[in-house]
Amino acid sequence: MARTSIVIDTDPGQDDAVAILLALAERGHLDLLGITTVAGNVPVELTTANALRLVELAGRADLPVFRGASRPLLRKLKTAEFICGPDGLQGAGLPPPRGAPRDAHAVAFLLDTLRNAAGKPVTLCPLGPLTNIALALAQEPALAARIERIVLMGGARDLGNVTPAAEFNFFVDPHAAQIVLQSGVPIVMFGLNATHQAMATPERVGRIAAHGTAVARAVTGMLERPRPGGKAKFGVEGHPLHDPCVIAYLLWPELFTGRDCHVAVETAGEASIGRSLIDWWGSQRQPANAHVIDRIDDAEMFRRLAQSLAKLG
Ligand code: BDR
Ligand code: CA
Image (cartoon, rainbow, N blue to C red):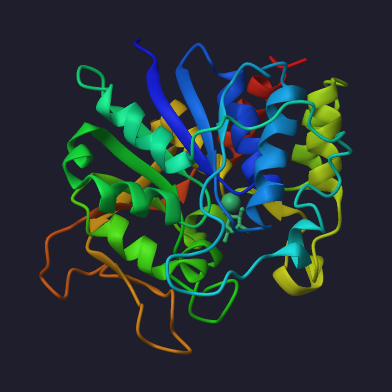
């Protein structure tokens, strides 16, 4: 099977970290061309440093990291230290990066990569606010045709996590999310209704810990830290692995099912800003612009995730 060329656009974040490590572990299947960073879970200086720390952890300091947007298109940045800790990777126990990001801006790298992708379209994997992707699409809309598809984490069919209405990535930059959803690029969307099925329970984390590698120690440290509210609030122990679902989907699509829907993002409301409006029942009779994932074979996904991470030292 030919390797899929991908770019990960990310705001690490512990769940972003596991997604990046999974992609690096599966380099036989995924050709990761570069990592672009964006402000989200923590400011972009930290998400960039964290991307570098992760590639260095995985022995892939050669992989280029590009720093991207430091704030959303129109709104003030909202970060999530309350869940990720002050540096965004609480629990990982990683040293500061030795390397530095490349000189080019993330958006310039995205555009260059797409320009050079004539014969081999690229899959974009946004794991944070969609600011960089929206900027690239706005700058050269014609390059949308060079994107094979966008597989993203964002939105929610049901309740939000940062407000009652909105999921974090769409809430932070709703205007960017709307631009991406209107781009005409085929989209696969992992909202909270799907990713909350991917729970890193203590038993599942224990299977990763058993590898005893540096990667396993970092992942275990991140996933064993307490989740604010914990079981009393959510009814289940552990952190949801939102972002790894995106990479798992590229590797093992048979573990996921969903439905083609029209999706828009609320950009005008106050209480509802960032809400993903998923027309699950097709009542608006608008053409579908996203494949919205709904069900995950989570037991099998975690079994395969543990196996994959064991490939890293
Ligand atoms: C999303 O928000 C971030 O905090 C996570 O990394 C994930 O991308 C979940 O709402
Ligand atoms: Ca993220």
